[in-house]
Length: 252
Picture 1: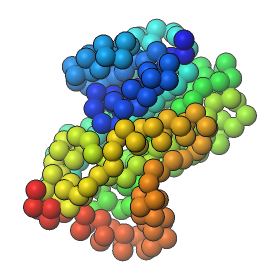
Picture 2: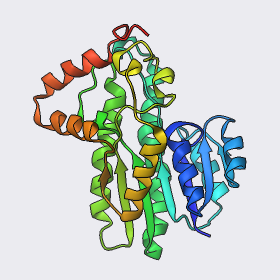
Picture 3: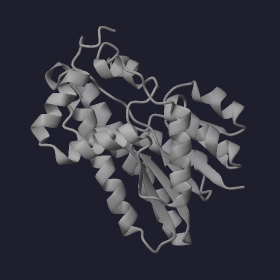
């Protein structure tokens, strides 16, 4: 049986990705930094890793659970958000966002991708965001981390051409998950607006990964937003982002 490792799998897109992988016949190892990951693993007849991937110890603990087994699908979805202005955000929260979204992803990806390349096969899915195309007024650190992930994933996909290993970057728009509550953004326009179904996003992402596509942005509106963000002047995009993410504007 093929092995799929899914991080950030206790809720939202990660949970739905784990469900898709299990339904498609993969044995799953699901990871998250909260005990809620255990019932997820039980429901999917998989293995749980309650680990904090923002830390080297957390990455080492997940690696120990994998225990040298060959990973066929690596789904790197773990991430955290941070709303409000940069100067209002606590420095430890800023650091945690960068460590989780960037360094945790790289630390886990590097050894597993090496093993995939050595044996000549493997699929990797990394969750970026259309936010990575936008200067994130009132979400500056989060958007910057996703800009890194978006560009890094495509670059890695090209570095791995011819190895039998593919890399797909999922770049969703606003999705109906715990993200906005955890980021303190429930009173923003984007926090209160109608959002995409995470199960649909996960299905689109899984299919793109299995097809070996470099990028996937589910939904026409999200594609248009990403395209506009690349074309319009950065200052215009930053002001549009202000209107979506400024605290209090959603009256939530």
